[in-house]
Length: 533
Ligand code: GLN
Image (tube, rainbow, N blue to C red; front, top):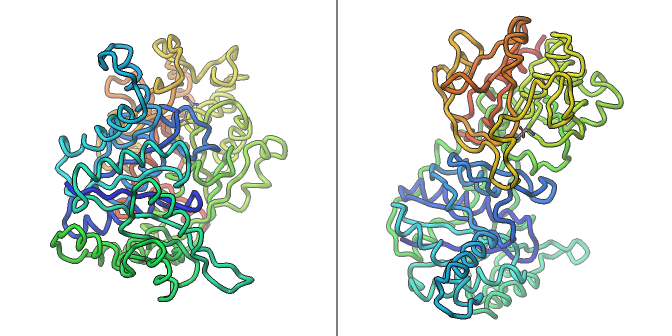
């Protein structure tokens, strides 16, 4: 196995994850098998307990791992299959080492960062050598060089490269080369310093990927080459993409990144076949139609809903329409009513979420969509909200609610299952990961999916309360998908409406640019129709 380590310098949010994913696209299209790993230096065992404003979306894998959103990029850009082994945090590493220490596994040794923590990190990188058939493992290290908490990871990588030999491992450093307007120049100093930080601890990057707004001219490349000790043909430009992140692999191919990597590894693989990818990008960036979709949200931060944005982009490409997402603050709707914000949109999407802040606003938005025949798509919390709205306003169950928002509601239409009531730890204790569901013949869901059984990823604690099933169904709510034993409600819909569907799971984790999710494409198709009304 060959190893590529991706580090970041100068600032965070450089798009290391995207760079790793886009490189993966190119290598896969050369016929190589690629695996990915993200090492996150924070002490949380996983991001599941973090506020989305801190961290962005929690991306859920099929096996139920709650992971960093970069894993979403890896899955969307490539065919690699990810499991919980693909996201390692300092928290996990320390947890393992400390429980080994308690068991007495270290036989009286003093347990230290070097070698015990670094050994555990190397073990987790080597895991892929033993278990995967990939040709190349791309390991991204979270954070920025110079962070104290990242040091054990960088040290482990130094040792690892020594172990497997430099011919089998490449360090690619992603950095920022800022343009200073007053000087009219690109500045290389921050990059020089961040590479110096790496060299201080014995790491020499072989490839420099420079994020820049301006073309990286020859002299700038030569300067970077000289000061960073990297051959000039390995100093690469990663210009900001113009329209879509899916252009990124094409830019990197033009720059020769995958060619360089193969050359350094001595791998002979044919040039990446990118024609299909190119035409997919073309459909995304040159749509004929435009749609405005309202996302009834609690967080302004786009990263908090990353996979939803991407899924709408994929489905937009499929439907030949560009989608502008209007983030509407649920609390604003609470205060000012829904109409002001929703009158001019073609569809409404209520995403997942936790806690009661904004819940009443989301209910109002849902009522507006149901009553005004506006396409509605509810995801996870969105399905729970739609259930509450239907119970209150169609079934006249006054004060119906989820026990998450009102523990003493007279009508707990959304509630905890018995097994969840016993849960004390917040971490990794929700209903997580891929679960099969059966679809009811003749329903919208069945038509959209075109099959009887599906598997979708979950991340929630609360469920549709079966005590209210008959009552809601009697007044027209259609339960179109359930768990295989019929006990858990997975999809609800409202007939005699252009498109009103809500799901207890997260379809946004299974959409890819070249394989958009059928519920997202169906939703946008309905929105397109609504916009032409
Ligand atoms: N808060 C809800 C629950 O825990 C919904 C979760 C979500 O939307 N991911 O069930």
